[in-house]
Length: 465
Image (cartoon, rainbow, N blue to C red; front, side):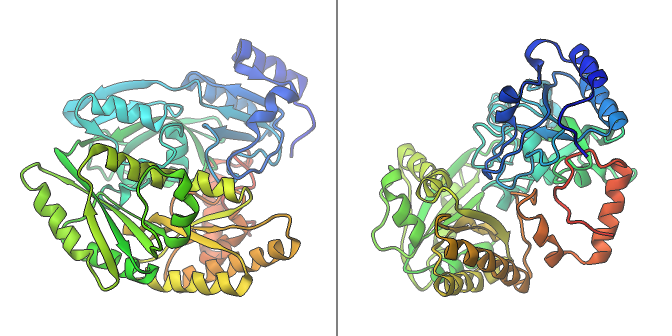
């Protein structure tokens, strides 16, 4: 689809539309915008930096007319290659379209542009006594647009839900250059089809988001954070099921397996246990007058057979160290195995023990270390295959191991991705989960939104029909 250079008439129009350094065409300048955290890379033919909705609309019309691929990009923190311009074209960066446009505390919402960081949204909301529940590990740098494109949630999803549950409406531009509003400013509304939830999680393949109306939640009065240590992962998995079966839902329930604990010990300021099989980080929130009773109830439910210790963190520094440990996991593992394979599968909570046992068997069978951590409260497990790319035999085994991992997840009534998305790296496995009728319908939806397939082509869906 792409040519080596953009048509001269298109370049002339782009220079009129994007002034100064808001347009990059030199390959050396464009090169840094062709990657994401998957470590995959491709060179775009141009990079544009939008600052307002009308620019995006006009740019889409140009791309539609000239049949030029357009790939929306935030800060490149995604791990699936979803922002890699594999067919060339134009990368549309939203890093300069980063304003909060409206704040309505009485009606519990704010409207923001896609380039604003998750952290900036949290800070703005907190100043008025609110928060936006999605909180990915990369919240300090990841953008709202990326959170919506992947439906990325983070630890709080176990209690408060994902971006789909916390976004009221969108302003978008389709692949034909037409603008539309979806959703409402209210928490109830059933007029027409739910395009908001359809577009969220579609990885920029249906429409480009230029504004989002976010549903805010009042900040809780109090929180308690605790750490539970287990002899093995099976015991920890049973504890997760027990915790989620009682009425007091944690606002975060994270787990780290024993292999991960040992690997990150030197990267953490927290006092990590020796020879532990697994660790759970549990956080509860609520009213000040009831928070201790909530914490006690959850701590009691965590004390299953194989539990070695449940400890409530008493000092803010201890809480901070625990969360810093959790957030340092992926970077620490990447420093150990730069080419590791990181998947974020999901299974029903009651099936976590079977998943962990199955992963242990696969690790032993293929001789590949597998380290697991993640959002245990909703069964969203980050499975890390620590592959040595210089070992050709191990690289070949990793492909078989990965496929068997996905087959195991589906056998356990799970799904292949919880929040990292599909992008490029997982696209060829989608057919394991979705049947041909579903794929046919999805491709039809894609054609309605994007008839010339210029929006992030080659991502999310395998070829079909």
